[in-house]
Length: 94
Image (cartoon, rainbow, N blue to C red):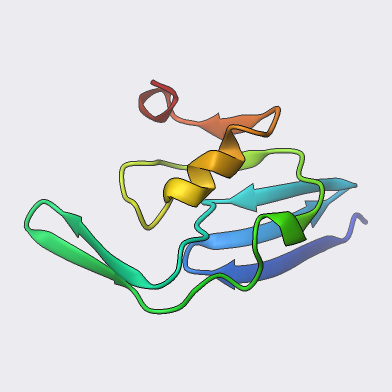
């Protein structure tokens, strides 16, 4: 049986370690703030547990969607651009 390790980072972000791979879901690293989306306001109340630099090696980012700034913020996008693989939807890829 392969062990799975799950490290909650805050918000939608989690580090999964599985069979030697390190996957980071929905990378968000910005400090608490408001995120307006149309007429709604999402409020981030807590910062991330770790900074991108503290995560060390990452193999891929599974990203279910990127339409909300609370699922992929500016610092998360910067990290995404440094990795070889991101798994997402066609809309997010465009």
